[in-house]
Image (tube, rainbow, N blue to C red; front, side, top):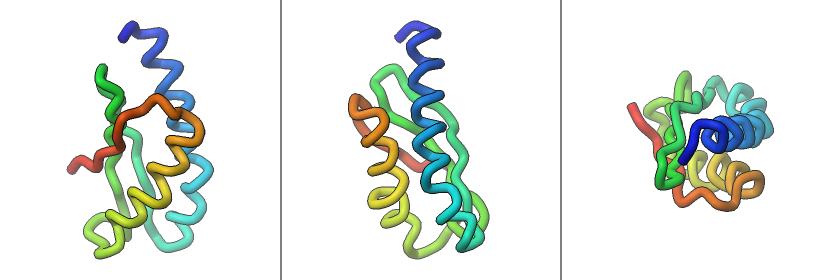
Length: 82
């Protein structure tokens, strides 16, 4: 993936994350976009109350990943990293 395409993808992903960020912050958490790999895996880091929360995987899949997939349907997966 060339740098221009990657930059465009990162902007679209960041925009999608912004749509769910207020809900995360309302519960004391947040999410940080780390990277998108060449094979279209989005890497994020859950922070604040989301880090270690028993519901964090549900939040990741049902909230964050769904929002990102709506904006960027070509992504393959969303993955939480430490």
